[in-house]
Length: 262
Length: 305
Image 1 (cartoon, one colour):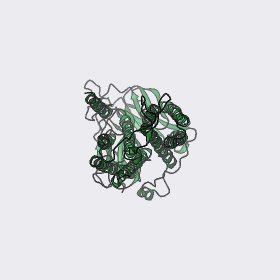
Image 2 (image 1 turned 180 degrees about the vertical axis):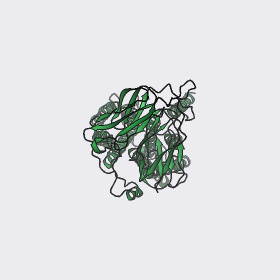
Image 3 (image 1 turned 120 degrees about the vertical axis):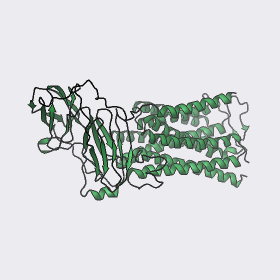
Image 4 (image 1 turned 30 degrees about the vertical axis):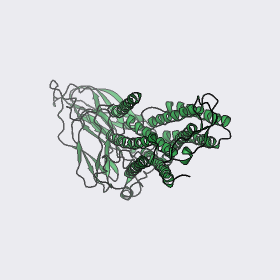
């Protein structure tokens, strides 16, 4: 009798371990409707729109990086003569910062925006993600291509969206997917080549930009109003500014400066 | 005189335990190289049995190959014990070992399917140690020493060494769970540090108890000495491993030193657990249970078929 009870206890404990561990977190299915969609929302009157522009800079010295050791895959070594530096912090002339996502965080919630029909491409080239940071809208198609002659896996690790992990051998067709919820920013990694890291910023509205090495951004076609503008950088985090624009106003000089030590 | 068949069975059990240790190292290499999801599919790898051997795929595929090999070895061991052994409980232990390795393989597939969900990964690392302990136990139980007519000794002190070593092994296992949970980001380092203090205290208590109570019993002194040395090495490695983890936070990818130190910490941790389990089993074989009347009892623990 006791033996039987012990067996049942053991079986239940093991089932709880296996079942409980796997079911701890419910994952969004990716099929949900975009959160921004709502019938009651306004459309933007294009005769009143203005813009907000500025520059992102780094205060201080950018970290010094060594070339990435790609010896884990001979193809990657061959594809990058002279070595490649990590793209965690990329600066231009005048310490301007690249790969910063600048976007309207709040203030545009009352408007509805169609989901863009064109896709955003994330390439794997020379065993690096190109571009390092991509931005797209909720529901917009992300197309991941492999230009390399080696195998990659693409593994976004979102907090608020559905996680996935897919392999992509050389010459394989593009992998397409979309994200159901806004999220800045989703880390993407390749577990085959652990140095390969990228970020996907998923936006609720079309007012966003990813800076190039000149650090400049320009958020166009904004209706008059007061907005929280956020700048996100993968190492230095986020900064916010509240900006108000009037009818057809082009507000310039909305600059952000990240401290190198932060 | 011992039959050749049983000696071979013991040797095979030792070989299986050794291969399990290598499998633990292979698993640790996967984690340290951040290669756990380099093969998104399971049980196949990129839709085939032989994926391209580049980058993280090499670590993950080698781990899967080693796991498959150990599963086959365990099946063979369980079958061998089933048909060769007369001790019913040992036959059942062989079956349990096989069920454990199957459960471990399934848990391994869950780690892939749940994208290395921390509790699943920590459970995978923990079950690996429990399976390792089972293979060690089988190796001990199939040894000629276990089935010899060596007399049992009385343990006059309290707590009994049997109890003390059992608790020490259990606490080391808990400490390994805490380490695995930290390594797989289930929670922070503090519980693992507290565990290290408790394990150190328990091991010193055991070593002291063996030295005081059974100074001349080599069968206990030797494994206690190994346990002491392994714990010392593990504490030093733990310090280095934590520094390596902190340093890795700023690295673009795992460095060779990070991989070597963290894998060594996992490996020596497993050996420390093995030494403790070994000592515990020896205590159970050599020391009479509490309440035994005779000081030296002729008590063979198994019957060689």
